[in-house]
Image (cartoon, rainbow, N blue to C red; front, side):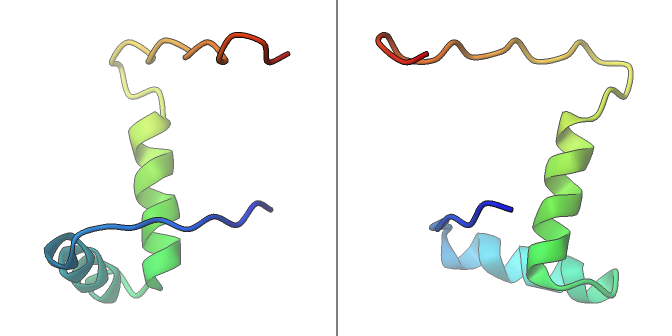
Length: 57
């Protein structure tokens, strides 16, 4: 599992934690849920892969 730091505005964090509490999840679990939901194939076209920067394998 990869760890990284994410900076988000205070108001967005408040919305995230409120949604997490309503769904009985931690803020971290809520973020993972929303990322998975956003990346799932729900009938919309899949986002195009972003190519790596030049010089990277």
